[in-house]
Length: 384
Ligand SMILES: *Cc1c(COP(=O)(O)O)cnc(C)c1O
Image (cartoon, rainbow, N blue to C red; front, side):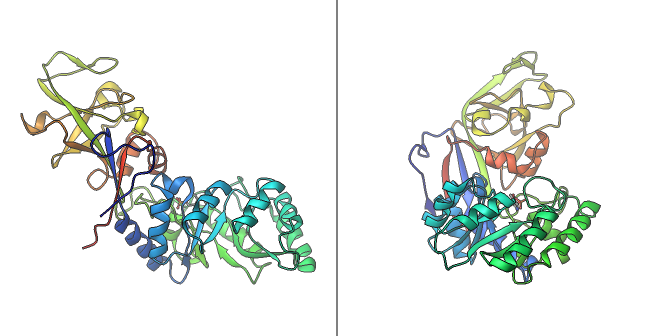
């Protein structure tokens, strides 16, 4: 078992909640994705502090599991990752960030994903070593209309680069808009547009699939896949029977047990309590990324009921989520079943993160990347 806390993070005895991050489950998910994607290579997506889990332990674990290529979103994230993994190949999704930032790319051996002709010309113009063609990834826009070179841009670049050989596109990539909806016609259209343009770069590898794309399989796998959420245990395609292991468990420390008689209310907005209830008060709230939208059904009619897991049983969340507190209705567990200092699981091995995300109208990605800084973080290895 490895315990890692960085400066500013509370120790286990004084934190309102614990995050238990199962690095073996992470390694398991990596290996599973590798099997599913074979013979494509799996590049780990570790942007946004590895989806909130901590880039350092996550990247180290993936490296140990055999991952050699990584994607981040921002150059600053690339710099942070370079300090962790001196020999990794690091790609940066969001492009160059201007001519001055090119120096940072060079200094830290980051490979930009070039998203526009201005990215291309800045990277060409930056003289890190005049004789060495600069490596890059070309992002081909195929329908999502966020980042990426248009078809005309790509053709123009292919023609010019054939003459100058200034850049070496290692990977030609695109990104699917609807990979999480299997059978969606958009994916097939994007694949077709992508294949036409990637043919202009026969030397480069091709990459289309994010996590959901890995599960689409077939022609979407290409040479390199780029899963993020699946590594971290999120279900890539809603409703699928996910073979992935849960990686993150968020726990809330019970600070008080309240006996609330029928007819009284709990929390902000005075949610009515209809029976004599035992309420466990957890020491985490929306400031810890447990969104206020989790607020119970009774407090927000029409919404789905959220559950936590307390001492071996699912229990409903009751009342509104406060900044630092969340209330759990533990009446069904009976008197004296819950004690101060017990931990309520907000999501993790027993309550899927996707379930909580759905209750509050979002996706697991947002819950993970919202995890606050107040948790005590424990990185564990559970492999037997
Ligand atoms: C974030 C991102 C990924 C990873 O997506 P997941 O759905 O988390 O697997 C892949 N490709 C691009 C371009 C991304 O921005």
